[in-house]
Amino acid sequence: MDVIPGAWRRTAAGAGLLSAAGEVAPTIFAEMSAAAVRTGAINLGQGFPDEDGPAAVLEAAREAIAAGANQYPPGRGIPDLLEAISAHQRRFYRLVVDPATEVLVTAGATEALTATLLALIDSPDDEVVVFEPYYDSYAAAVALAGARLRTVPLRAPGFQPDLGELADAVTDRTRIILVNDPHNPTGAVFGDEVQREIVRLAERHDAIIVTDEVYEHLSFASPHIPLATLPGAAERTLTISSAGKTFSTTGWKIGWVHGPAALITAVLTVKQYLTYVNGSPFQPAIALGLRLPDAVFADAASALRAKHALLGEALRTAGFEVHAPQGGYFTVADATALGGADAAAFCRTLPERAGVVAIPISAFVSAARRDDYAGLVRFAACKRVDVLEEAARRLAGLRGA
Ligand code: PMP
Ligand code: GLN
Image 1 (cartoon, protein in one colour):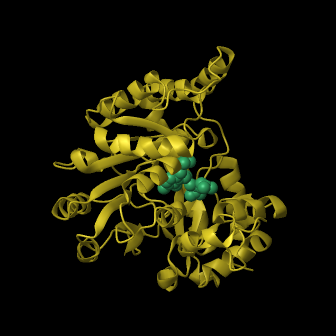
Image 2 (image 1 turned 135 degrees about the horizontal axis):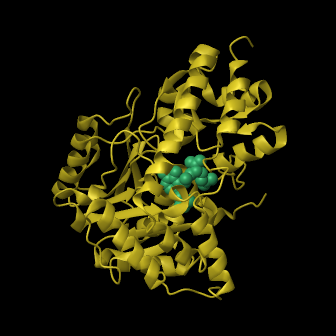
């Protein structure tokens, strides 16, 4: 493994980017996927589907390569995709977005998030408020941008924030409130009251709202509501999403961010030096995908919902306490009754014990709050039904073990 020169350690250390030995630590997802390959266990750790999405989308990428879409696309993204994103926002959410000035195509939601933080953080005193547990790149990107992370806990059951704790976290030092909804890893979808409070606090403290809506089409209980649709929100919100989950193309890394033109220009300024551009032949394919009929989107959500039901039942039968998700790829379960009060240790032995890989929620939590989530484990439901059924058989053996 590479050793990062000391100068970098100062900026990176707080984010846990390095191991104690100063080495580049692999992400928890890479580590757990490697454990699955090593042990032959079923990988319910890293969130990626094991079957392809719409055939028309895949075919469009092949055609684009054959037609020569193999050189740098324009910096903001190809016009066809910019227009498709704008039309998608209008069709599903009645959001009006100018494709020429208010949208930017990025290398996945990950780049959109990192470029946004790097662009908008002004000083080391700026704070970014996030809900905890949080997706792993958030703390790393906040550290890279040189800001402070303020977290608001989401607690079981329900994983909705306490409005008092949210109000306490947002102050005049808050530059950004970063909201992932539907939420990874908890599966929460934030209620109307929470959404309104986020917008109210952002207005009161003149903060920018940045959303991560990569699971926008995988909300089970209720239709997804982007924060940008709330009164007063659009002018201070950058909405981020990605095609990876919607079309089962996580490896294509086509994401986007839209919002007020001045903010998009700021993000573009950074983005052009991160990747400049990406995914020439994938951009027209995702443009086609975004224009597919409503049924394609609804079917993806109902298929995943059925998989969560199967997984949830398997986990209950095995002796876990299950927190059924309202959206997204993941089901969270409490392993305490199975001797998993320390879920990190439990997940380390699970591949050998049961032939299944899962991720402890502690991987998404800051050190100070780790004990509050100690028994919780995240399982990915975005796998083939036969794979989930085999996982169910394996997990059932845990009770007697
Ligand atoms: N945000 C969340 C909440 C995610 O779960 C993921 C990855 N699955 C990402 C961002 C990254 O998305 P992308 O692969 O488009 O960069
Ligand atoms: N978002 C995926 C997850 O939560 C992983 C993506 C990654 O490996 N960075 O599992």
